[in-house]
Length: 67
Image 1: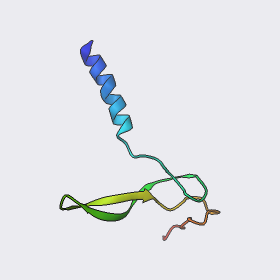
Image 2: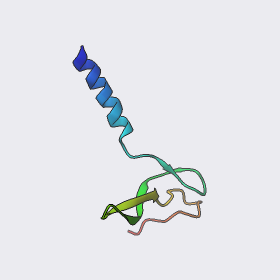
Image 3: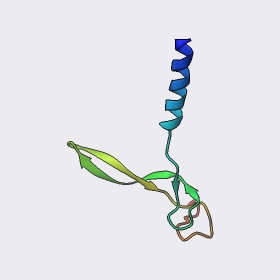
């Protein structure tokens, strides 16, 4: 019984610890998070995350495929 409860709690934690969903600042569609810069914290560099390019061709933040 206790193992089942722990297993369910672990699944909920794993779902919450995944990548957060960002939205495009211009059109509001969902976009992936990308590293937009870095900063120094406690002597090491850590990434700054932000919204990536928008997948919608009619959005001003759209970047077509390079290939």
